[in-house]
Image (tube, rainbow, N blue to C red; front, side, top):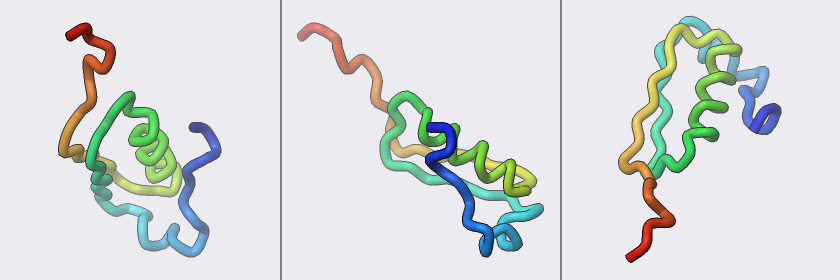
Amino acid sequence: MQGVIGVRGHRLGDIAGRHVIVVDDVMTTGATLAACASSLLRAGAARVDVLAAARACGQHEQQ
């Protein structure tokens, strides 16, 4: 995911020093959310929290 998600330059002022919340419907591996959080922190966010409505797990369990 490195280099795929980023913050556009004209938005840096909106993020710097702010507490940002990233919302996702379903978290699977967490890679996308981690990439979002990393990009926001590099852009100057003071804090990044993640909220997910559900987490996918046990996708390969036998029935």
